[in-house]
Every structure is written in C-alpha cells, then in structure tokens.
Image (cartoon, rainbow, N blue to C red; front, side, top):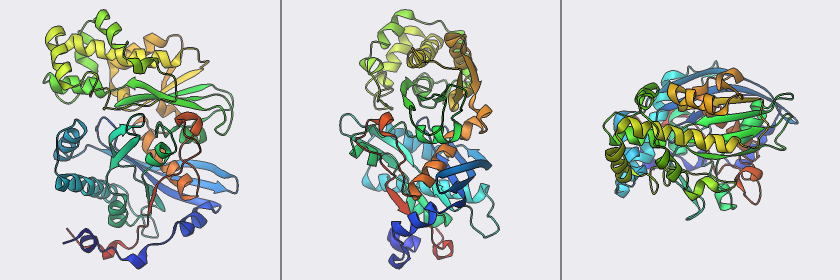
Length: 409
C-alpha cells in the first residue's frame, strides 16, 4: 500500500499558502501546539499556547497546557544509531520518518483534549528530529519526522522544516528560538540571557527593550551530548542522574585545557554546532572509550561537566547581564547547575520557569510562536543571529484536513 493510499491524501484537499497567510495574519486569538524532540533525545515535549495578535503582531500569550513523555525505547535506539552514523537502508530511513510523526501524533491526541470545536489546536509546529546539522561544510540541516503525516493523523494544520531555508540563505539554521525569546521574554528593565542546556547549549542575549533589535544568540558548545555519550560508553546508563557520578570525580585540568583548544570554541558568532562535532569528530564513541580507560568514569564525567560550563562562561564574557535564566534538560543535572552557578558568580542564575513557562517545555512553546509567525508569512530566524543574507520563513505548510479520512494502521 502506498503512503497516499494508507493516509488517504486527496490532492483536492490541499490549499495554497495564500489561504494560510490570509487566515493567520488576521487579528484574533490562536491556539498553537508546539512540539520538540531535542538533540539529546530525552523525550517528547509539547505545549499548547493561546496567542493574541493585532495589526502590529503579537499582543499577548498564555500557556494553556503542556505535557512531556519519553521517546519509545526502540525509536530512540534507532534515532541514536542514525545520528551516530550507523548505516540504514532507505526503507529504515522512511520508516523512521513516518514513525516519529506517528509517535508525536499519538502523544498529542492522547494528552491534549479537543477544544469545543473538536480540534486540538488551530496550528502546530512540528520541527522533527535533527539528525544532521552541518551549515558550514555541506550546508545542510536535516530533520526527519513527516509534518504531512503528523498533520493528517491529528487534523491540525502544521508547519515544518524550520532550519533549511535559513541555511540556503547562507545562515547557520540555528539557533532558531531567539525570535521567540525576544517576543515572549524580553524585559523593558532587565538585561537577560536565556541559556538552554539541551544536547547542545545555546544562549540568547536580550538587552532591555522590545522587539528583536539588539538580540544576539549562538551555541556555546556541548550541553548534555558528551555527558550522555560518556554514560552510554562507560555502561552507566543513558545519563548521569542529577550528576551524581560527576560529583564524585576530579577534574583533569590538562585534558580540559586540551579539549578547549578545539577551534570551534574560539569562533565568533554566528555559530552553531551539533553531534557531528561534539560526540562525532570530537570525542566520539571510540575516543570517549579511550579517555574513560585513562581517567575512570567519574573523572571523565566531572571533566566533561567543566567543558560544558566553560563553554557557557566564555559566551557570557564581556556581557552586561542582570540575570541568567536556565532551561533545558541540563537544569535537571544538579551538579552541572551547582558548577555553573559557582562559575558565573555573582551573576544571578534562575530557572527559566520564572519567565512563566516550565523549563522543560520552553523550546516547544518557542516553536509554537515560530509556527504562528511563519503561518502569517513572517520569518522564523533572525539574520543577525544566523548570519543569513535575509530573513527566512519555515519551509513546509501541511493542512490538517479531516482525520476521519485517515485509514487505521
């Protein structure tokens, strides 16, 4: 059975982007569902928000509900293998592309009750799972997870393919959340830095004010990626729970100094990175196993924590900051947060929850706003952040249609 036959796609159901843009440019209130599966593959995140727009753009927002769920073990294993370079057949690639969308659709329909009109949301952001990010070499950023399949299984109009349009315009395709950070979290009085510690760590610098003028952002280096890889290589599980193992170790200063000589750390923004470098060509599985044999597991993890912290400290150098707000999975690593707080003292460090969103779903909420901006014909990336020649919108719009026409699997 073909994909068209299986999912019941009918060509006369597809509407043009003009209809979409006309709809979402209007003043009014929109319920948007944001989704996220980060570099560290730590789970599925979803947040449903209500945005109010007027003729000038975003007027107000509030979080309606949110949910988190672990990735199914088999899917996580297959995605991990793909990201780490294990060969896959075309059939396996296609299966992952559809299965990830199915898993997200099942998650959404189970966790988010329909509204009075029977729909879950007016719009969804489905950025998929990044499996390869190389904006400097091959100039490509690839995410899998079909937004078309997700749209038809949920009935929600869906925006996808957020990164590649920016890369085609000469940008990094990341970080993408600074636009949302500026519109949702900028303060008139406080100079803020929003730090997300996912698989890769990144910062958004928000000077006092409104809008996006003066906003900067870039990746700082590894977040949880190398720590999680070290745990898997050394047989300690999927991650170091609360940093307990790292807390027991001693930092190897010579190794840390050598690791920080990796040229990427000295690059000036715009810059982004991923597993292709950190956990790939730099401290990949084989090299990590050699380091573990030489250092021991606890010392290796302790030194990797310092590598993450030092990347963040370097990013904050020469910035005037009132408060550092931290989100992402790294917030759950108690030892990492203790070391970070000590390293940036006397700067105030606070969880991103204090901005009005649970830290675990902040990125999902950010993508919800990016989807709305894209649906209204706007950009999702800031050229001043990514280095693109001009602002880029998202690449794919998939109408939701009628779920009743989707054949059961």
